[in-house]
Image 1 (cartoon, rainbow, N blue to C red):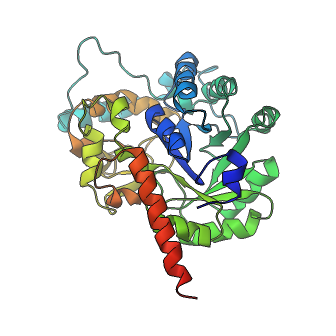
Image 2: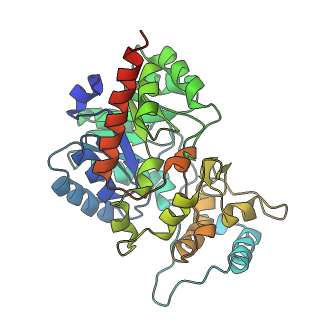
Image 3: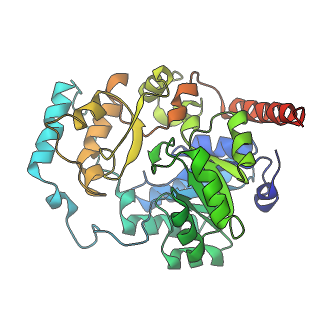
Length: 371
């Protein structure tokens, strides 16, 4: 598996692995792909700086990138408004009542309450960019489309490639017009924030729309060498994989699972491809999540409408923290794609990567026999 992206980034395989775990991201890069560290979980820029220092030391000199969450239009931001005051009391009451009904225990004494993921905020995302550009990153990807033009220009001044996710061909054209180098065509099957068009339809549409001006990656529902081959056949120059790495062995180093599957991983291992739901309860924007008793509570008739980003995530920040510590797979709150049905065992990243390449090669060889 070798495309122009392999030469551009100095990687063996055009497989870009998004993950919130530095251990997984570093392992993806060491295995010949491009590890991309999700930054949204870092409320503190110094914490991100320390983690990127660790990445610099643990990628064996292989390239890696970062993923930020920065809308092109500046939303309401904590710099000028106390966002907590914008959260209605009835929403807080619903969350408290639901946690009690689901028997999610409170945080242990001495554990600080999470204030939500501030990485959704524009000012925090900008601090992520500033920190990341002090490190030898090769890619900045934006999960919410085109970053602001000044951020794109700043990245290019540092020789850093800019990528943006797109759920429609029109979005892809807008990204490229703004100066984005790589468009990630993310189909409906993907985990997290995703649009309404399936990968089989979306990918060739985006390739036809911008393929002569930018590189296109296929994303959404990819978890095998066969699916990578299909993405390349549809015109992509590589693939973007996120959900599939969540059941990697390295992820346990972040989860503190003591050598065994974390509660989140146990939930994913038991799920089928039909056990996801697209909802706004996680961040305020439509995102594909694991279907659990928590997401079902938010779809009940008595549930309030989720708040807009970033208020929704601020609302459920402590709830997510309590759920993660509850040791109950049935209430896990986790963005995940429909590929979860193929995530049936815990394996090291290197083994996963080797299997992807082996199946890709076998698929291409089989297709050659059809000519």
